Image: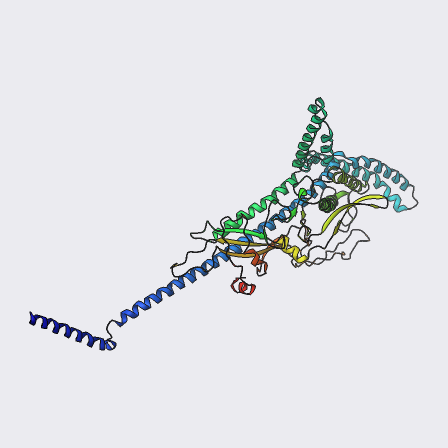
Length: 559
């Protein structure tokens, strides 16, 4: 037993001695060192790989989001520009419809033609007097008077028959486009209904009011071009929303593609706000319907309605008379043989003795004035570009009645200063698109996280504008040579333009609206990223960037 105990103690002592020897030589033992280094390197490489993957995915996500914001915002600007061009085209169409209605109403009634026989009869008397002239040249002209009178009488008759046939086809269609005149609608509204005559006064009055309201609605619905314009204005907002969201999602493929949302913002006040489609002063398209029968006038003051209607009537009437003058004065159209001698025709006019074109011009102008001033003075008004009147620093417009030389006139005055031109451009013609989507899930989320709490977002800015005319190359002025002894051999007094001949005035009568991207680096972007989309993008969680400064923001801004 004792021997065994000694042996065990000796073994343990030897083991302890060997262990102590190994410990003393451990710093000189190099076996297994590479394994420890490999573990450390693998851990570091794994962390670096995760960081690289995270940085790469975040950069890729940011680039895709910026591309989505740029594409969606620019597409929204294109939709707005096309909407403005559509409204401008229909404004011209409205004025030309008035001109054509007056033109063909005269062709239907043939008032000018009824005066031609008297004029040509007077020419016969003149011809008889020319035969007795003491000048041989004048006596030689007398034999041509009779055949010329017969020819012009035939030309006038042929023109009248041709225009009457056209009028039978076109006047009903043109009048249907213009709709029920105001005078007819008011007369129908004043007539009591049959049921109202048999009942008491209050019931009759109520029935008449209801009937008058229905007739007013029917009259408003019959004015086809304004109805189409109102539909375009509302459709542009919906089209812009669908287009921007679709394009933003197409540029953001991946797991969160369907969760990508785009919102178009506008500076309608001193702070940024989402566009309100139901308010004509804040809607996407800066177009306003000035007609009292439309939905926009109810949200304006009486003075503003008066101003918009005056501007609309002035532009409509001037443009309608311009188109009527073009229809009558066009040498290549039906009235070409009746025009006066001009340089372009070389003095060769077939039928100027009858003065038919001047008579036709006078009667058509009278019919156009009847259309504009008596039948549709307050309806069938063109849409107008929204003016810089409807902001927090808006000018206060008031309608007042003044006496000018004994004549009572209704005018509108304003108090206060209008906004600056740059603010006007920012408010109504500059838009910002913001794309929102959930943050990309980081690789190794336990080790790395997204420092900004909230959804990822990106933004871009677009403006709609009227470009300047392009420079073009034109030939020299044409030269005309007349016939006869005293032929014209000089150059005409034309001056070829150096740029495209399109309107430069910013209005809804210019059809060259375009869109372009502009930098989004102004301070109002800070307000944008902290403003809730107000239901336009449900479920969006905004990042908390209240403490960020503009210099820091510009450092991370892609613009």
